[in-house]
Amino acid sequence: MTNTSPGLSYPADMELWGIDEPLRVVGADGKRTGAADPRYPDDLGSEGLRRLLTDMVVTRRLDVELVRLQRQGQLALFSPCLGQEAAQVGVAAAMMPEDWLFPQYRELGMFVARGIDPVGIAMMWRGAYHGGRGLIEKKTMPMCIVVGAQVPHAAGYAMGVKLDGATEVVVAVMGDGALSEGDVHEAFNMATVFDLPCLFVVQNNQWAISVPPQTQTHSTTLAQKAVAYGMPGVRCDGNDVLATYSVTAESLRRIREGGGPMLVELVTYRRGPHTTSDDPTRYRDQAELEHWAALDPVDRYRRHLEGEGLWGEPEEEAVGKVAEEAAARLRAEVYDAPDPPVTELFDLVFSKPTKELEHQRAQLESSLTWNEP
Image 1 (tube, helix red, strand yellow):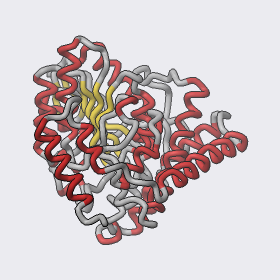
Image 2 (image 1 turned 180 degrees about the vertical axis):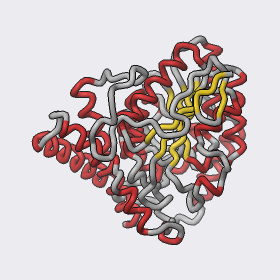
Image 3 (image 1 turned 30 degrees about the vertical axis):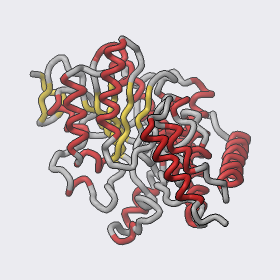
């Protein structure tokens, strides 16, 4: 056994880093924290570095618009991602197009970075489509409202990837509250026992609805839980998009080369409500909000790019225009959008409907028209 972190021991052949203090590349002041670490790929180039900020800004603007649409009765519900843009964009930017994403329900930034139409996401929250629209084409599974239920789905898909001898990696994304669900630990165990190509990403946003991590677990960190299953665990500053990108890229490289599953904890903060039905003022105070607002991921990365000479007024104006156009299009296509026919439900079950389904469809159609004049 080799000690790689104070008070913890891991197998000698297991590479673990940053399991106690979150790994960080860019500090809250926007400056790099030190010399480049060889473990962290820095291969984005100027355009790629700017793209990270563009996606974060667009995500934040769309997030605001989706909340407004819900407040106006256009969406049934919505889970904002304010404050978690770096954690989401950084992960998605490091993924290959062929990698599969298994999201929970707060991953708007990942959808933006993967090129998924936000209108399709909004239509899910409107109640018009189950799980969203335009996801599968981008190797992204439908959103999962049941906490943690997508994690065993991801492990199962990763089993199929391994049996097929394919090279893609499956990325399962969850919140800190998901680690209180048995399904998640069964998935961790399955992935390590069968050495599956699966990356487990925990967005530790400090609040599982109204319950903080310290009342859910006595583990010092969430990344630490990887040790029990025999897989590497990494703790990263999820408000640092470069650290998130780098840690994810290195983790995916390791998994792609046959290193087995990994767990990444992204330390971030949910600055908005859990959902638009939540009142966070009942369980957290203003001082906490102000502390995390000072660590804002968008402002931090903008300062970093400005310091590197990669961002200025022209770039700010351009990204502002892109964000506003995206929000305007979202509103135009979602507001009072017609609902799809309810019988479409039956078209998406089997390629050839069964007799029982045809019977049920006929019953539904009859019940929809029985009181028509």
